[in-house]
Image (cartoon, rainbow, N blue to C red):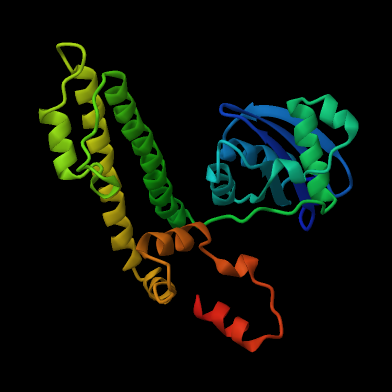
Length: 275
């Protein structure tokens, strides 16, 4: 008995997704140009069930623009069996109409059509483990910036209250243990109390502790098997210290994505050694 079940086996099914926090706008285009657009909740399994129901046995290829969801959507789609790429929004070919009349439906259809036409260049997707390692480097940098701002606020508060920083606290001694002791014990403000200054000092000291904790974490990471060999190589370069080395290793991560083979053996060997 002949089966009437529709099968898309051997066919590519192109899926453009306009990603939002709670909902997705999804446009599906088959190899033959059949198009279907629908809204759904932001759930990879629900999308897979939809594709499996309407396009059974097809090869599902999806695309979405990088944004607030990072790589979470990418990994969720891959986990359920939908191949996926992530692209930069500025790299999507757009007509004047699409630039002016921006809607979720238009955006998802534009992505699906560009994917089908082979017009998209995917961005680099990081390994899951690298995301957390890189996060430590970025958090450390963020805390450093906040700490610098709060230190400036302390100086500004002293200036507003007519307090002069003693000569002995030169640039090298600024925010040393002696300077903090002077702030806590000797500084008097115009008001009879100094609660605002004490709060700022505690905030700076808390940030300082967090920077040290991040630094310790990065030093421990540098000795992990996935980084140690390349870390040791980077440390042989004058001017590169442990933090800069870990920044390079976690931010660049896979240097092969920048590597173009050329005929210079030394450069080729140097690039290979970084791996």
